[in-house]
Image 1 (cartoon, rainbow, N blue to C red):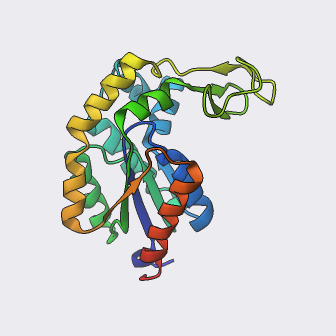
Image 2 (tube, rainbow, N blue to C red):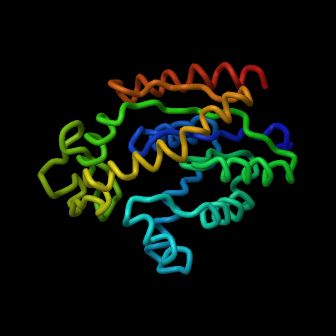
Length: 225
């Protein structure tokens, strides 16, 4: 696939807005790789790598991981062969410095972002979503204690034990949202000025409803390519 024909998407929104779920849907539909900075950081921490140790302090406190760490992770990741046909950035960029670094790294390769999808969900709904999340230690399936409860309080359908991430508590989530509002919302103006941002309303909606809005937008941009 020619460089200019690569589909490069950026998914933005507060933690718990559902962008990861929508990224997986887009991956299946368009056959391009999802790159989640949150997943990469958690993997680095689990592996006890240098980057993992450096980022753990910030992740556990619910504050933003420094730009230089995240930029280095993404710059290395998009050079992999599985990104040759395009990719979806889930959770990056989160600051203007990251956005400018992304423009620079793409520009060097004669690439550009095709669309930024901004998922807009009220803070109070985000808190309910995140603090009710639990996941299986065996298969990785994610449940919600209210909206998608597991078979039993602590057991997955596969028989695995369910755990809640240590940072999925009200105090940490509130701190993460404050950090998001301060550092990430200016990106809405940045990408709006570039003419590549589309707002996807996700509050009070099912996954299917949000997916429908995403696909409507994608039909508009892919039809023009």
